[in-house]
Every structure is written in structure tokens, then in C-alpha cells.
Length: 152
Image (tube, rainbow, N blue to C red):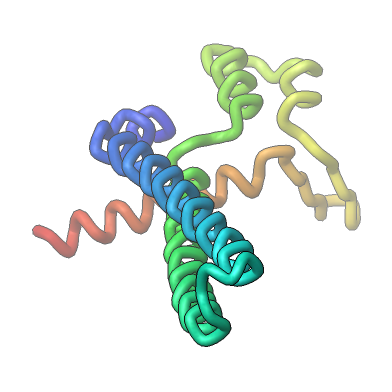
């Protein structure tokens, strides 16, 4: 399931595009912020009037807010994408280490089991170390299957 998710080159391309967009937006934010700070120097040196300073300052502030908003949107998409398509390295290594084993060993239990809570003689609860990641992958798989069914 993990290999199927990671194998999609379209998804990897999208991740790289988001990464490039983040870089562009950060560069643009830096450029506009520098212009805004230089604007005060121009005003202090009397190269522009107070009216021009206020006007340009407002324009740059609006541009900065717009870029920050776009950056937040792209970063949120990138974080969501990162969670959806990239598993924690440690989990992947642990799974690959024990994937072909057919008998449960103490090392396997140590690697996968977080805790065992005994409520009664026949009532117990086992919490796995990677329950959250596994639940996220199951949810993602159902969503992907649902979107493929919708296209059919």
C-alpha cells in the first residue's frame, strides 16, 4: 500500500511543484519586505514625501499580506501532501525489517507494540507504536478508492 502511494510520479511531481512555489513566494516576500524597509530610508532622506511614504507603505503592506496568505495556503497543501505521501522513515524501515517474518518475536513486539492494557480476564487493548500512521494510510487508501470509483 505504501509503495503504491509513493510510486505515483504525478504525486511526486506535485510535491516538487509545491516546493518550488514555496521558494518563489518566500523570495517575493523577502523582496517586497526589503522594498518596504528601503521606503523609510527614502522618506528619512527626503527623497519621497510623507504622503508618498504612506501610500507606498500601504501598497507594500497589502502585497506582503497577500503573499503571506498564498504562502500559508501552499505550505498547508505541502504539509498535507507530505503527510499523505511520505511515511516516517523509521516506520518504513521497521516494516521492511520484519515483513518476511512469520513468527512473532520479542524484537517484533518491541518494535510495534506501544502498550497492552488488560481490562479483565478476556478483555484487553493493544496499542501499536504506529497506529496513527496506519490509520492515516487506511483513510487515504479509502479516499483514493472512492475517487477512482467516482471516475468510473
